Image (spheres, rainbow over the protein chains, first blue to last red):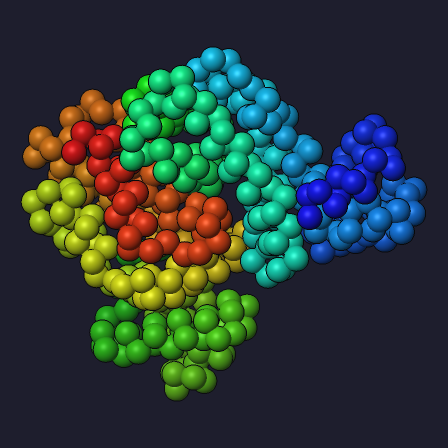
Length: 196
Length: 196
């Protein structure tokens, strides 16, 4: 799915792509996933519907690529020389209100995917799996540097610790995660269990 | 809300209460939250609608009490003498298929509560807050026994670690948590970070 889309996408400029993604995110916030139809995106962005389908294949793919594009930084592009530095650098790219806006969008899609198999499939293939891959590579770099022991049993659970903190915060405290909460969680749980 | 309901509930026997809760859970699985109306519950259980409202006050409260009643054991009722023993004893009360059924129900309600303020309020007051209270007491018992140091910074994050593992499993692996996964997570993350 990813490669096909990449080969399709050369037809529009990165600026135009960013503009389209921003419009899709605005529509998701304003009217929700169901009403963010390809027709409505085409009308709002003055882009032909055929072009949208040619570039993205489906609404689910367009939405998920818009969401992923919205990430302020990819953890794979950060390399501070330490795992603590890498995670803190990623957090520093966003303030609490930007994180709240992004969390609300993600939460909406995670809820929506439970009764929308196309969206679930696109979220898995184009968001969750690549993100998990990037996280693994960043953690592996820390192992290769000797920061984390290769036989640390917690290595298998880094993603669960991090994703879990993001979601359980909303459930337990009825508020989106903040910078301060995530930093404290990393310092109290994730770093010490990895021996950092 | 809890006390008022407790004082209301003496009017039916515990057996009848359990029967009603079982019917509500069956209906949630079969037709979902929206269609599990008080009318439909009354018809299915041959119970007057007025009685349902007198006993539970609202559909949201009835549903949440049914869900909580469905837990195989309350962690507050387990006291093996060690925190590891307590958590493992709770897990041992349910096999993977029972846990999968219960997870699916919980996930459905957590999704539903995002656009249903009454349900959200009932879930918070009658499920999440009491469960968090019980968990705190069990962890505090371990601190009082000297198993966990009172100044361990991870103490503030036990609930996030556990709830997070339950939900992130579904998101990351696209499957409900299993006994084996939760045991390994406890052994690799939760117990070591608490110094157990």
